[in-house]
Length: 111
Image 1: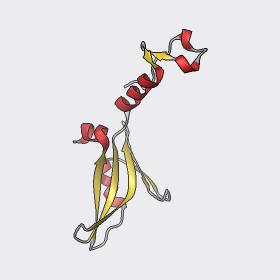
Image 2: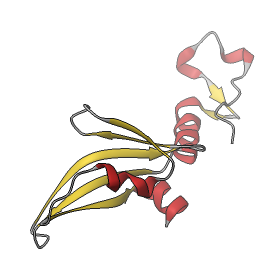
Image 3: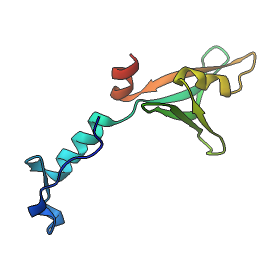
């Protein structure tokens, strides 16, 4: 997977009118970002019988590793597998952590 795209040398002077692969720069870059976006997930705590829930962490899966950060930014993790994320979030007898995939790229890669 390439994380770069070619910009024509003729277009380097006028940044408002750059073209990538024959199309509009903004559109081409937005498509490139959408195609290469890493799968994202949230760790959600379920309280009691599921009447309440709270997102406590966000993560993303890259080619060789998985990263997770708590929503308060105080804890960051590098994980071997995304499913390991729930092991780092404390649960109690009436609190259950869940891994929830977010967005279409996550469903495509892990669905």
